[in-house]
Length: 530
Image 1 (cartoon, rainbow, N blue to C red):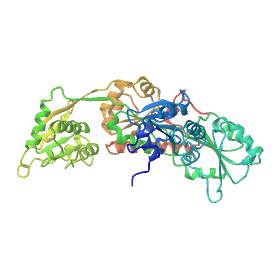
Image 2: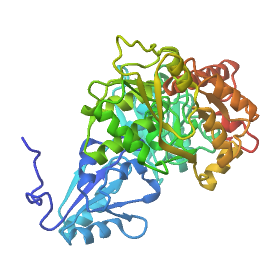
Image 3: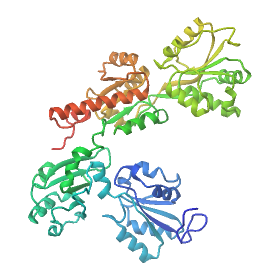
Image 4: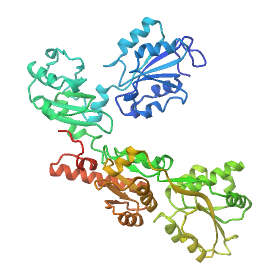
């Protein structure tokens, strides 16, 4: 059954007189956007939103040609109505849920008055989403009533919220902490009543302070907006249920010196640990200066010239794949060939291409590791002794030397060239040298050399994590202190090792009774909340 359409919608999904969708985008985490909201954004011609308060991942659901209007430039309801009257599909995005401490009443009322068709797409409200991320349930077996208060404009009658067993969720709290505490105490709530304040909820900048009504004002001094306050005994659950802010790398800004394409799985893994990855490419991959070598190699693959093809990087897989596209070929051309991959990431790129590698080293994932498990040439078993190595122009000869010793004839073909990438933007360079990053992951010796070459040496408070002994040696030669080394040479193991380091660091701070500080907050002059 197809989803029902608004009466204003036509069969092609457009509207007769235009339609405005009033959409909630959640309190901060772009992952809380609902499926319905993502679908509506994907069809929108125009999106009206506060550009300063929307996560780029939310707008990534829009079509490339969608027009984005900043709601701070004019009356958002008028912007939406004007676009809808030209027959366009308009999305008006609200922080949280449109109907709770947002503009549904005012903007929806204005659209109704103007005769513009609209619909409401509810979102995750800060009133429920932020306490969930803070590890505070709003109800339990002893507390079954929740009251939500919008204190942004002040003037709240706190007498109406004095019942002792009621959980209060107070929105717009950042400018009303004193009013909340004094008002509730004056209304009869004990000054020992548990209270928690969470700022920047559901984001990796989230901070939660647990206190009491009596201590709430001094304990939360300097907390940032937006914030909300939770009042009631349910605050006591946080010790057991805090899951977000206790992630091993929560809020850590981690530099990943790779391209977005290369770093996709690594960045996802880092996010699962609570980190904020920042991809900075240190090399640029370019085609070989003369393509004839690759053309002959691809022809040899098809005509049966080789027994083995060795892939020592994902870039090599990409280079061959692009050549195949040029010739109208696909993975079937590898039928009868044996394929080797230097490690798990390269193997994954081959599988995505439709090729299951026959040989992947289980130990050291490098050319040396592959050489250790390579079989000797056997003229009775191997009809051909020729091996194709499509590689970078600066690849080492270690693997070729070992294969030659084992009786194989190697054809080393330049599949791509690697050149040092352009320097990153000035803010990134300043963060690297000034201690703005909490950690940097080095996945090879070349990433150490190239990052320092294009951006400078990381600050001494930055945690340095390396993929293996050779990378560690290079880092130390450049004067870096190595803090973390992966147990096995894979990017997944490297991220895991950094997470373990972060977890132990946090546990040590808790045990010592020290404030929880990220590495970047340990540098001189770093902003600290008083």
